[in-house]
Length: 203
Image (tube, rainbow, N blue to C red; front, side):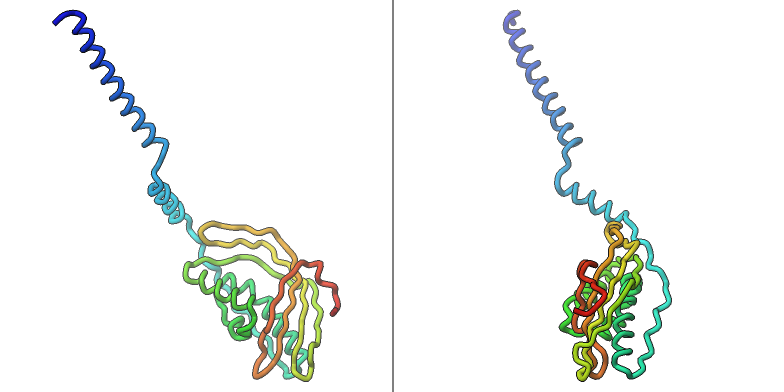
């Protein structure tokens, strides 16, 4: 074999080695820096599995108000307890008082109950406190035992424990509860708005 032919074969072999080594390098780069979608999904699942939801607190159930038979007094008592029971329900998952007094047509009530039951299935819960700053008691139709109670409330230290820990800023709300008595008291409407809507009076 001549020198020229030998050089030609050497060049071809060298080029082949360069191509092979380049492919190996590129393949290693892809595998190191770019994970397939399935692997990314598995990584996300592992992170979710590693997040531990803290256990719910063990709390005494707030005592229900003793109803006197006086419609005005009882309407206020039920509305107040309905509001103050809310943070206890979110912490413990006990929806009994809301189920007892939520009318089917109260959209907010039913959404809260559905969300609470869904959290109960996963172990998620919501921490936080609530206090009534002020309230106004209104009569819609006393002969039909229809009343409207307005509250200015404040929610603080709210943290939702679920797939992640989500904290909310402390906020005030204007809450309006419309309720009436048939055989028992039921909340027909639960409205939440900005605190500026609370005027400290009816109308």
